[in-house]
Amino acid sequence: NAGVMQNPRHLVRRRGQEARLRCSPMKGHSHVYWYRQLPEEGLKFMVYLQKENIIDESGMPKERFSAEFPKEGPSILRIQQVVRGDSAAYFCASSLGQGQTYEQYFGPGTRLTVT
Amino acid sequence: KNQVEQSPQSLIILEGKNCTLQCNYTVSPFSNLRWYKQDTGRGPVSLTIMTFSENTKSNGRYTATLDADTKQSSLHITASQLSDSASYICVVSVLGGSYIPTFGRGTSLIVHP
Image 1: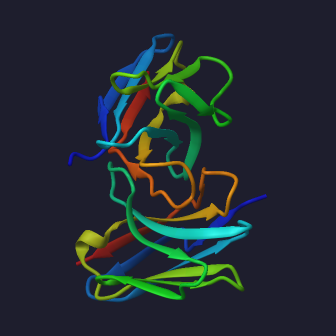
Image 2: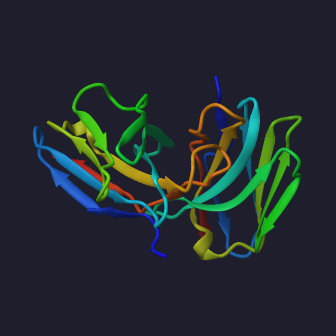
């Protein structure tokens, strides 16, 4: 059973470009979470999605950031018009169900560098 | 406000030595506490999970303790190995309500030969 997969592992974008980060959850998992980790910082929640629905996007910046989890295919975190401050590691996690008893399994992360 | 504080921020030890990492939390009502290990350039991997009624739980050379009264947890690593070099993150979940856990900033452990 493959774990959570993220791609690309590393992404370099120039200021103003768009970044698309992909996350394929573990088999059977329909709950996906996106986190951002800045250097020397802890993981910060961004958005929680179930298939075709955004459940909680309270941690997502209001502008330039969007996320989706379509019926088919991976979850996508999209950052438009990237700025230097968007440089970070973005982690995706998936779980079997919703709630505190369900463990979140993390992917290896995508390291975004904005030049 | 739910918070998780970890100490020390970083720690350097020699291979073979033991060490203890601390986690204090103000999350309420408490559901469970997990310790994750995050290798450099990798995603976090769960080491242990503890619920309110559990005082101690072991996973190989890792032993986690929980004092729900004082809202403190510790992670003890025995006979450290070079591969233990990583960031150790304490994560606390709330009972009912929010499904988003609260993450500590982590303790960076470096094991030297």
